[in-house]
Length: 456
Image (cartoon, rainbow, N blue to C red; front, side, top):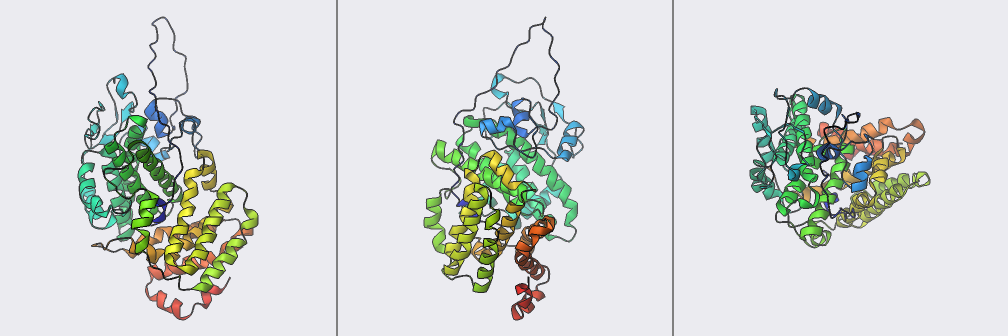
């Protein structure tokens, strides 16, 4: 898990006022103009009942104008919304709502219960029937899959947050989604849980979208629970081999909601270590002063990273390049310095506009993909530091690291042949680390004969 994004100083601004869309009364003698429905719009537009431009995978103009996190439903989610829910119940249209609750969806998927977090909300939901699999996911979350971020919150994830989730649908679905995804990763027959994980993720995003649409009307407790949900979804995306895009979106979302909490309420009632200065004071001193063991690996990484420099064309490229280069150099001094330097990679995500951020993540942006290969290598080098930041758990799963490595291999395979050679060393470094996790006996042989890694 990439632990450094919480320390990054997100600069994304959040609108201070979120006005409601007034209802327009149509006189009886007027004829409604026909229009084309937005069937694949983002969650925010659906929550506000406005037409979405559907510029997927880029954010729509509505979200850009309101500086909101733009998330689209997947194709499967769109089909389920038009037909039946995955649990067998059909979506039903809600009764007319008052003006105060006009930000809710016209149709609402299954949920556990009416949210007690916002006592003034008039939103009604279709009861969600939890299954034996859901109980299994919840149990697995409590013993193995709970997040350790924000820093200092591990005990909360095993106590008060699961209790709050009972009356907070988006957090409950995020917890079940994370438990299901992690269980599918670490158990031999886990693939059968993948569909259920996707279902819970869709429901978490849908109900979270309703809450986000309230804008400045959210209470401190509601914002705290939304932040918990986004952190859970961030960890869930990190356990998906194809979750790079989702992971980056959720990391940015953590920053946006954190800034909203700090700007409006100065502090969180649940999470104590949210600001970067407190983290540097309380967390960074726990990290070791020892440098990275293999200086040759660092020198080779720096050399291959510098070969990419002529290809940098955007500020996003240049900032990510500088953060990675600083991290490699800092690791020569100490793991602590390397960790702090690595936060700069996430730091720029909060400063980018929505359009710049989506362009940086575009699968066709090969320069970004080259930089992400180095990002995976740095994550491997910092793994001992990341383990220091986690408390001991009842169940330790080495396979937790595999999705990140699979992501790196996939990125390399999708690169054009003319640039693939620029990160061939990184590809070998990643594949050897992956093999050592899948076959622990290989690790000792690699340590005895590292010549294979040095071949490019």
